[in-house]
Amino acid sequence: MNEQWSPDDIAPQDGVRVIVTGANSGIGYHTAAMLGRHGAEVVLACRNEQRGAEALTQLQREMPGAQLHLEHLDLASLTSVRTFAARQLAQRQPLDILINNAGVMAPSRRIETADGFELQFGTNVLGHFALTALLLPALEMAAHRSPNRPRVVTIASIAHKRGRLDFDDLQATRHYRPMSAYRQSKLADLMFALELNRHLRARQSRVMSVAAHPGVANTNLFRDDRSAGAAATRSVLRCLIGTFLNSDVAGALPTLYAATAPAVVDGGYYGPRGLFEARGEQVGPAKVASQARNEADAKRLWQACEALTQIMFE
Image (cartoon, rainbow, N blue to C red):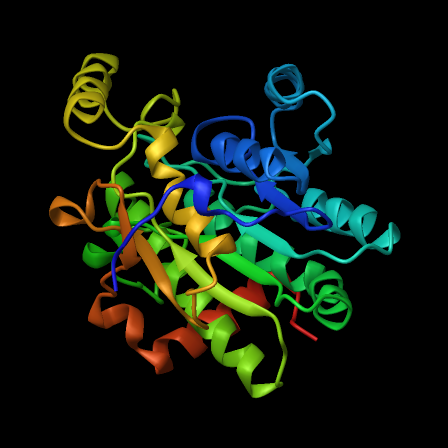
């Protein structure tokens, strides 16, 4: 079912605690802003502390009195992920919504994280895998204290449809192609969300795992200086995206829907329902490529993430 859905449909979020990764710009920023505007307490988990502080200042200017907090989190460092999660758990507060939003798209050369992982796989996949596992106790706390079910929302992409998992070279050490590595990471994100749902259902948890994608939105993925292609090419892309496809404001709608809409179901995947799922104000179930439904590969990916991060779901 497709819905003409807008942020006005979000129920009051008073008492709801949310963490949004990559909340200093783009979809993450607008997601944090809208949830804060509806009364949620929002943690902006940002890699760049200066940009995070600027985003926080802007949000506080727009929404005086909103419950907004800035925390440093670099998903390209497992030490940073562990430190962030430890700080959150030490507060002994329930976590109602975790939005795995931050991402890196197609740097032109192969770059490694602090732990030696290829940057896109390390950030988009392993960082969020580790973060979710470490924060699960806070999500389970919310499951026991709130009538509403906590949600993990992982942001995938329509790029997953052309993605393939190369289990023999997940880190692209032999062959690095920027967009191939990006598509693999987004496929892995969606498969993680679906496998996490199966994991949670098997343990009869009330925590939900869902996924969303923004269509093709004019976000920092297209403005970041690590993106593939020359500056002129990126400028053309930005122009085309701004003219024909989603703004980052509109791109946040599927994320907000997945995080708050009552119609969302376990293991659901949501996105815009316009042309080629690239844009549109209608939000509904998104198309899942056949390779993302491969449960054997999903389990293998899960095991690889555990082995690489040395972090397991309790």
